[in-house]
Image 1: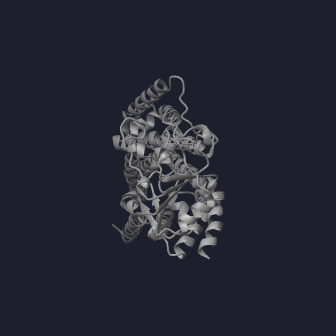
Image 2: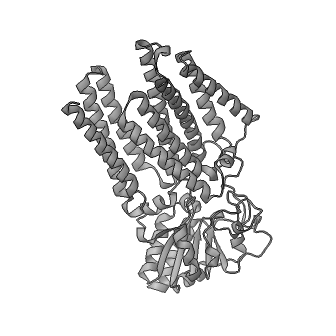
Image 3: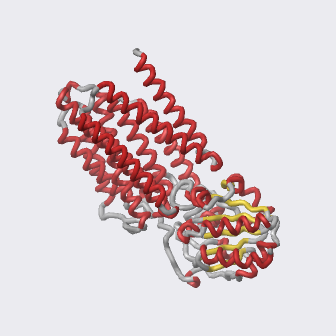
Length: 474
């Protein structure tokens, strides 16, 4: 091994260390920003090292070098602009788009490499390790690309968020899967060539569409995690195809992290991946009037003044945010309210359910954007034991994750871990209506004698609470 090759391996190793440490730092809100920067530094190091290797080995032409430079600048600029301009409520759509780009790029790498090998080496003479990684890359990358676009379209409202079941959808799924497997087997055995790969790609794209359409909007946190895992796996396969160590390591880390997160998210919803992929569970987007439901029992309403009085004289308050907060973009008002209570001497915490929002960590990102104190963010296991000693719980736009019906068998949320807000001394729920969540059932919390409903848009209600609170705290 030459000195240059040793240096290249050392730089790739340093990039891999940055990826691993970056992922580790992202496990805590307090260190997540640093972890993100460290991972980005590792990616920049890997890209620059690869450019140096390409230049040293003279494997690309001048035109190729120019195209590479234009691609790097255009991609970096587009990513920077999108990341800076995206609204917090649109973050899940952006993540889905990034997943689509990652999966599509990995598939293009495999397709391009297959065409290049066709000119230099007959398909029948290529090792199985090469043809197998090529078909796996195309299959996973194709499903990820089309599936992520459909998921992003559902989250953005371009495609209806409700489960869309095609006529004979499962039969179409089966046919597409059989076509994809047959094409993969034929190509791996050294037959067919590029035409077979085209059939494989078309089948993979169709599978991504048909498999994602029946999934309801409320299952999107799990689906986004799953597609993220697919993206990492496709990138790792692309690394094997072109023998790129950074791609293999980076893709494997993303794939493993996405896989673990997918399992945790599915467990948090008490749902199996198979049930989620089968679809038809609802969307969580249903709207109804105040009198539309409520399980037939009395619902107690509270005025802004009464709610402010409870909050101002509480010793301990827990805030439970949900997607309704994100939809109303009321995170800044919520954090201002929490800060006002903290300044008044009230102990304030945020209870974050793992599937709150539309993507993993959505509520954490939303509150971080409003500069919420990281010390006040508590996950489900940490906050649940504290509800029994909490004076007031303020639920903002969260529904099924607070439904006590989850403790009973025989309903759609049975067994789902919930935030035990009904164990607090008093609960105030800010919600536009008594409309159902994604599970399509009444929330028994609203009928609890300790619960009071403050109907209205989350942002407007929080603004009113903040204004009213000043009368008691000034």
